[in-house]
Image (cartoon, rainbow, N blue to C red):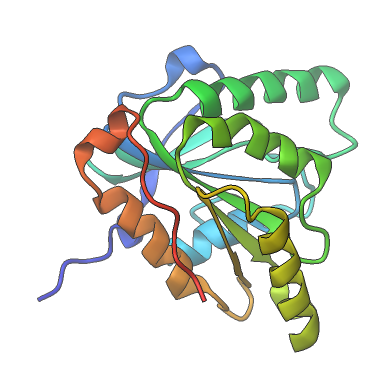
Length: 214
């Protein structure tokens, strides 16, 4: 019998508000994205657990780094959503400090899944996330979420534009995605599973390859 996909084994492990409280980890993949870009829905779809990640009609509710255990000391990490205007400035500043240091310094982090609303990709804050993480040499896989809200021609144009704008960054891959229609779910899951199945020395900082998508 084939092994159960590791993403399907996800279960809540812990939430932390400070880097000093991060759990010991062999390898982890982080999910990041603007508030209301569909990050929680993507996590729930890819893990096949409807309520694993908290989804809310009030963006900006996720203020902690949430760890979901996939296998012993291996995690999927839900980072705080960013960019929601109604969050107090002091909270925004604290989130930015937490996110930037985690993305730049976390040795166990083997890749980042960056969720962008396909109707509004590559916002200044999305680019800030890339600026923090790309210099590590680790891969980024961008999910252009809510793609079901675009026509077929709009999907193709958006995907082409984002890929062109990021064509100079070898560690970045891009695909269309929809939690509602399941568009791109299998490709995204395969990407993440591939990162986590790579040799253990990736967890010490060696780079994994960018994902290949249609």
